[in-house]
Structure formats: structure tokens, C-alpha cells
Length: 403
Image (cartoon, rainbow, N blue to C red; front, side, top):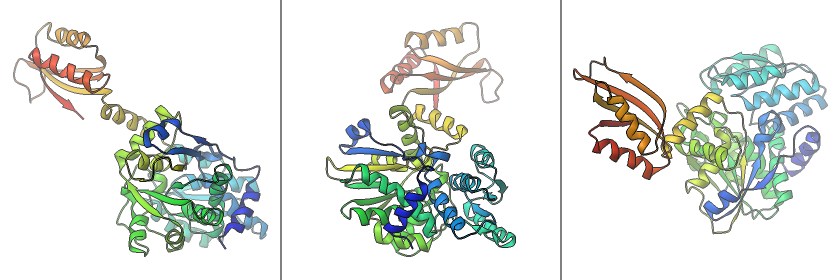
């Protein structure tokens, strides 16, 4: 049974295991939005995400029932680490089935807790189907990442902590994938303070729960594609959807560029590292998906921080280009001594810093006697980039901007 009583029991089980993560005021976001914004930093949770709460609570209840035969789970990463950590805590075996595309950092994190990892399937749902059969064959308990009362009760403890610190929140904003977090939190929120609204945010590339919320019946999508791998769920769960329809006041979508911008913003302005799923609430706030009266008190859950460093570097690079702090050019010039020197002198004169440069005189696309230079520049914003363009044009350089 998922209710406030089961969530309070989960809180007791989690004492001394899960961190009571910071729930702190975000001044820059508050100034930008006109709201009073607080961030619940579950990215600082043990194992790097809120998923530990639900996994530990579920496995604790299995142990209390005398089940010590081991557990199986399917996960894109964060639930996997939560299950692996919890199994190690109780001294039982854990096998985690993860999609083939799971970032190495998450695979290593799971193995670091002593769990066995099986890579199978193109996405979570294919890994899940395999894991269900594997658990039956091995006669072990399957720990569902979201559609389970004890798991949802554990996730609901996030809301209890938030409302203990800020009981008069007008809105709490929560990432939505499978729906376990928002379901558990929704039950807690509406029991503690029914006046607090609950907004869910999903990715456009994994919109099954949004579609289901609008249609009021569980729906699936053909595929999922999003940098928010923690909420990349193809098939909506009827179990979590039922709670979502009862407790959630609005469910919105954010696109990939909005998620990436939020990750970069949180890293640069808030000094907080989050993964894609953890950034969707801030993405929604930054891009006008949350419309509230000025001065509203808003709590946003940063659900996890386990981002792959390769993905992070890509987001930073694209973010610098998008914010006019980096400029990439392909420049045609005469292939003769001094041409390249004159080009770099012009860039020096306008204060653009070259961070990468390549020179090619052999391309079949070039006229005889020409060369093409590809260059990446550090720039200081929109006006500075316009100076670069004007200077090159005035001195006869033919160029194209690369994105």
C-alpha cells in the first residue's frame, strides 16, 4: 500500500543510509524567473541519485519478510546503483540488466558495489523484459524501478524532506520517466499539504507518460531518444499513471536543447553537476514551461548527477557555441606565403582567441591556388562575433560559419 504511513516507514528504514540532501535557495534562478526557487539536490545522494531511496526500502522489506535469495533489476543506471548498494548492505546477491548503450560510468558504478551486470537490449524496456524472465529462471525477486508500492514509498521520502524544510511551497517540480518518483512524492505532498501543486516534467524524446497523462490511459511510444537517459522510458506504467492522474496538477515536456542548456546553466551558475533527467525541472523553469504568479515558492528536484563525461563535454561544447562564446569558421584564402599570417593578425586585432586551427590546400572542392582554414575561436558574445565577421569581410576573406 502506498500512502503517507508507508512513506514515513520508508523514512525510518532510510535513516543512516540515505543522505538528507540539501534543499537550498537558488538566487540566480529566482531572479531570472521571478519566483522563490529552491533546489532539492538529490544529485548529492549516495550513489548519485534519488533511486537509492526506493531500492533500499524495497529490499529492506524483502529482508524483513525473510527473503535472502538475491535480487534482479533492470535499469539505465541509477536504479541499478541503488539496488546494487542496497544488496551489498544486506549481504545478498544482485544481478542488474542494463541496456547496451548504458554509459560506462554507470556500469562501473554498479560493478563497484559487487553486483553482476548483464548488458542486453537497445533500451530500458528491452532490458526489463529480459530481466523479468531472468528473475523467474533464477527464482530471485525482481525489484521494479518504479511500478512498486515499496519503491514508490521510498521515493516519496524526497517530498517529506522538502516539506519539512519549506512547508509552504506553492509548487514542487519533479522529473518524470516511469513515474515512480512523482507518484510517491505526489501521495506524500497531497497528504501533507494539499495546497502544494505538483508539476511533472518529461523529455520530448521520451513522451510516453505525457501522452498517457493527456489521454488518461497508459500509452507507449515506438522509440525513445533523449540525453536524459534516466527518464528514457518507452512504455507508460498503468500503476504509476493512476497515481499521476490523481496527484499531478500539470505535466509538461522539454526538448533536448532545453535540457542541455539547463545542465550547462546549473554547472556554470549554480556550481551543481546534474544529469539530463536531473535538469528537466530547471529546463522547464528557464524556458517558460512553468507559469505561476510572481513570487511563488517553487521547489525543484535535481534527481541525479550521474552524467557521462563524454556527454558532458559535448553539452559544454555545444552550449558555448549557442551562447556565442565559441565560433567555428571555414575560411577560403589564397594559398600563398603570408595569407594565414594576415588572417591570424586580423583575429588578434579583434581579440578573438584561436583554440583550434586546420589548413587544407588539397580538397577537391577548392579552386587551384586556394586553401581552406577551419578554425575554432573563443569569443565574448554576440557583438564580439559580429566584429569578427566584419573584419574578415572587410579584408576580403570568404568564410562560412559552422554549427
